[in-house]
Length: 438
Image (cartoon, rainbow, N blue to C red; front, side, top):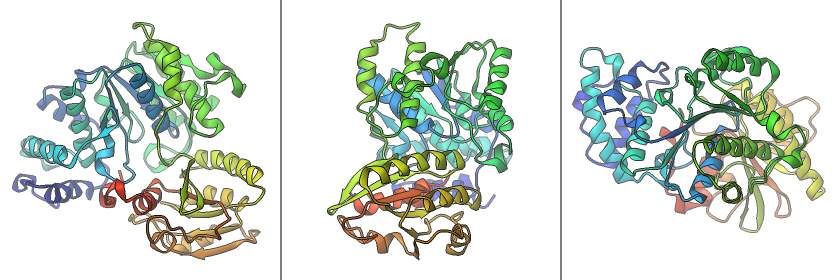
């Protein structure tokens, strides 16, 4: 390994950032044995708060945010753990939607670093990863703030994810699509098997609208673990009007709302929960970057994270609706991590955009201009320009993409959205981009 954890004693937020970056620089490290050892050394904080564990290719963040909003509307103290962050690292760990402060992060790293060093004393590879550090912070924060419920989003996959040390009240799998294929497998069945790794013996499972091959795999795993399955399709059917309403836009968010409400119903089988109040919470969800409408200066802008083939299908429907709504095609700003993600995204964008601005998110895995340009379909007759976030959004209240009367859509990597939001909403604080990926 390239660092000596025992030699590092973080004393302020700057040194904590460097310490965490030294962990993140090692890349993702899958397997939960390190996390099991870490939570054991901490006295198993992950078992001290009832949890809902949420996995899925797409929609898991939205469903987690919906669950948080519903339980907070019900008067519960909520813990929410999601990844990655948009702007600030503390966004990953929230209690009643208050993000972890810089001071709290410093305190947790100072507490966890010696524990990690002891675990690594016999074998350096046993040192917890960046994501495992953040996961431990979430468990400790939920415990110490005496949360009534912890909503924990899987980082990647499920079976080998660090969050999979929880023993949840309900497990949720929102969707299955082809993403992270190099890590999780290149078929729906293989990816479903990884996501199904969060299913625990006898633990209720809620499933969203899944492709039939993936659903078969997940139901087989659930049956082998005596885990009852509650299906959104079986509960609400196929017709959109039957699904609960939410303030988040898009048909897919209605489907997500159904998944979240069904989860509350399942948990409510052992608790008295007011569904009317829970539904009110669905209309007050705060989840930036998911078809989020804003006005920058006097220019309408939509922020929408869409970074894989399944997400591109959702984006296609949203852009089609937007063109019908406004009577003209939008201008699109996009940047992506990885050609496999960029291809379906650009094909979708080119069906609806008048002009495209290509940008490169400040991440090592970001596609270059050349890679993006090579994926523009030959038949696209709109304008394609290379640009940067700083050129297009030079200061708060200013957007230079397109003309003042055009709708601008910023889509692609969530890291791109974070960069833009940090520039146009300076109250969020300076972006912590080096700590975003993973």
